[in-house]
Length: 292
Image (cartoon, rainbow, N blue to C red; front, side):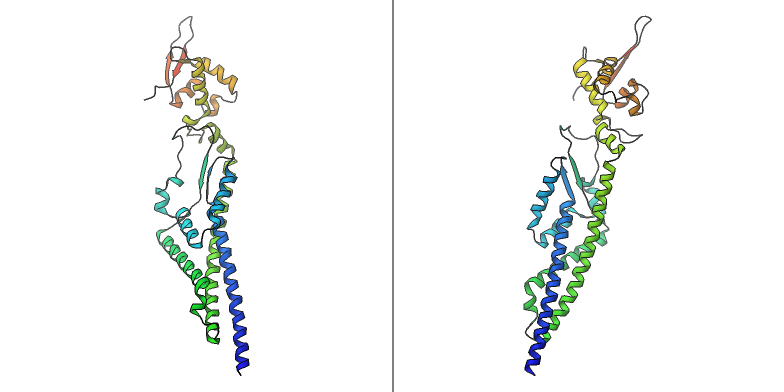
């Protein structure tokens, strides 16, 4: 009888070990996916530094505990609607700030939740962390696996725990897939001619152009720097210089019929037309306003 009971306990002890291993494998999968999600959710820098930036993010997250990873997830990825509106990381600003010599970009993926869903998600993450710590550090304190009853109770606990971790992993996979799709959509957008026009020429749409960062304004200023006379620059002279420097820059690119219309629409210059006479053609002159 004692031998039979001993064999039964040994069999259940092996089952406890199997279920513990299953639990630990799933929680490790969760942690690995969480690190990848957090690492890929943020990027900033130049094209040349993109890979190094991600490598550093991965390195910084490699040794973080599950608790710290959850904190980072909440801080950088999970947001309420009010936090999204208030966050400068997810706002769009065009034409503000000083000019830079090298193009830099910043990308932050976030998951917007309602206040109720965010509170529930935070509670679920706390419970998951408590469950993980309980199983990893205190399983033998909670269950006497040297008895049949203790083994069975431990098995039940591990079964319920695995179900919770598995559900959390499925949710995390959904978030990761959504984030990946967002990056793919962003990559597709950046490959469009419209985005290239915005990036390199300042054209936002057919109705809105970011004149301050547009190529044509830069060329007009270059012409001003090299060909001004008495503080003003001849538009005719500027046009000749622009055509030599960048023949693709034409008024139609900016939905204008004439260069004078382009100059006025930029809003970046003081424009002074000079009327012509019977013997002298009219001329348009411009200058950058003095710095305040």
